[in-house]
Image 1 (cartoon, helix red, strand yellow):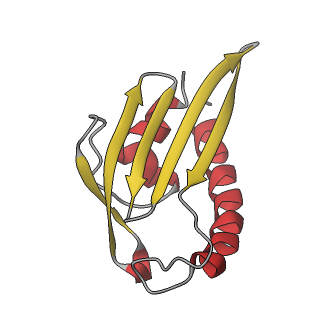
Image 2 (cartoon, helix red, strand yellow):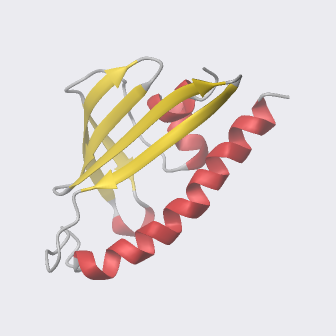
Length: 122
């Protein structure tokens, strides 16, 4: 699947999300360069090439990508889990404040992911 490298490698994720030092090995720790928020520690939790990739992000969140081939196309299921009402992020902001901002951000980022893949497939 042409999507796999874009969700499971440092260069792939860096092309549409954030610079990082990811190695796609379960249990391997890595860092996302989160711009104004600094470095975010992460840990790979699942690698099932070419269909599932997951990692823990910061102290609270889990990010999951699931790919499924359907009629020559790829279906992506994306989940950003770990939200708790009233809980504070490691950056001192409430999950209640950050979650809607992140939701809007993911819409744009996933569109950027699709565009990145489509532009390299030509």
